[in-house]
Length: 97
Length: 177
Image (cartoon, rainbow over all chains, first blue to last red):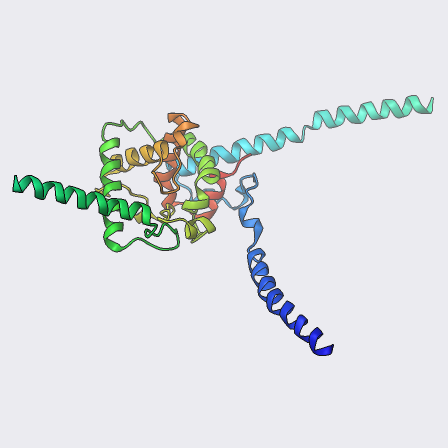
């Protein structure tokens, strides 16, 4: 009986070990390599003093970073923030009354 | 009469050889098994000459507008970099797995598809043609089916600058805001 169990186990092991090894090697590859995410331009590393402003690459980079800075500024619209603050204050006052 | 017999026999033999090659399944089409040097050389010559002939009459527009680099850069990142790599990258799954191996366009010596590597215009028009029409059985798609000429020229403009870009410059030019 014991030898039968031993034989069955070893047969399973013979099939399972290579299968597991192969499947693990298949998922070992980093899936993040296949993911493309939209990312912002990293303008923080740009050294303006070393850039030749007649070079199309430098000009394109400046354009990109300016555009991005404008967008970021718009995203943080202070006037709206102030406005919404006032609205909130008004609501609060009404609630208290 | 004898000559005709020989001609017919040669024709039948050639036809037989072609049929055996096509139907026997002996030809290995696996991408991880390279062509022999001779076959590779012949295919390479066919490709180079075909592109040069087809692209001969294409007029190259002004590619110095910085805006082209921004449009072309974003397209390159999303459409091409997986196979043709980017500054600082030496291989990818696709660059290793495809056969023929896609050229690393981030390295200057391999950006050229023209016979005359010094000819900037020839390189530009050849690159335009390849991007627009693709290359049969190579994994290179015909982007012209989904992209207009202006967008393809922007990619050509970006390709002209690509070998000289640092990873930082590449990141800024290709980022999508």
